[in-house]
Image 1 (cartoon, rainbow, N blue to C red):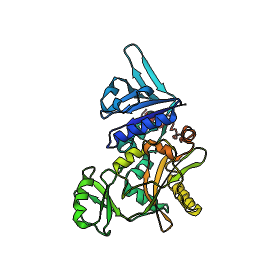
Image 2 (cartoon, rainbow, N blue to C red):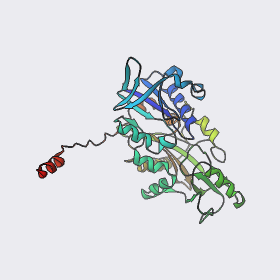
Image 3 (tube, rainbow, N blue to C red):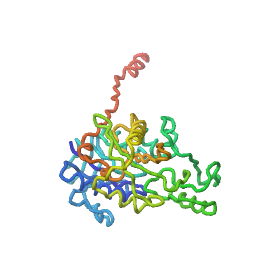
Image 4 (cartoon, helix red, strand yellow):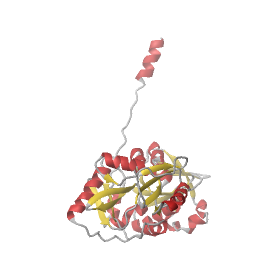
Length: 343
């Protein structure tokens, strides 16, 4: 079965999605694949593999490619004399942020009965909103740091946390709008920076030099874990650092951690992944504090699908288990019964 890489989208992370798709093209190489680009006008385009380079999208020449329409089971390209259908594939949802990660794209493809490697609607809701992520994690026994949320039209004061803190937009990734605030005099500026991106923000304690590790995973015929990575970072991983990070193709070295800590990470990931994230490949970012594991964020569509964390990424990608939606049948017995009752 073909893989269709769907990328682009209409979020602040549009460009990162393009970088991820180009990287995935290099990783997959001669695998049976097609590329589908979603632009800011909500149009789909089939991009030939040889045209998968950044300038194609930045200068708008992608519009010369074949335009696609969604149909049941896939996409269709309509021409003057004939149409061509693209079906019998699994779509990899590689649209970062916005509608790619909030469940919109998955729902659109599910409605058209297209098999998609992506978090479903419920999982997207849990992972897209950092507030709900923490509530969900705590409910299943996975620890998180304390947090507060603020709205752009609400009070701009901390209720329980003390400085230093880290301020983040509630639903964005790639460190967009993120600030570390060490004293109250800088708090308003950090809030304004975050509020430029969205109306809700989340605030957490900032712990200097905290150990951070990343772990990705998916389900094939069993739960499959990636290597555990300890990312190299400064005070925080900024947008530019993450932008470059998403273009990595080589497999990272394993973090130097104890077997007991490794098992704690695997156990926490399993609690998060099963059963809500079946059909997706996600990356969880954890903090390690006093040998205890704390969930930082769930990356429901990680950059380049976190290929660099897996030593056998291509084989895993082709074998990701996608749940079959429950099929609803109707016999119209109820309507027919009403008609008979009317005489």
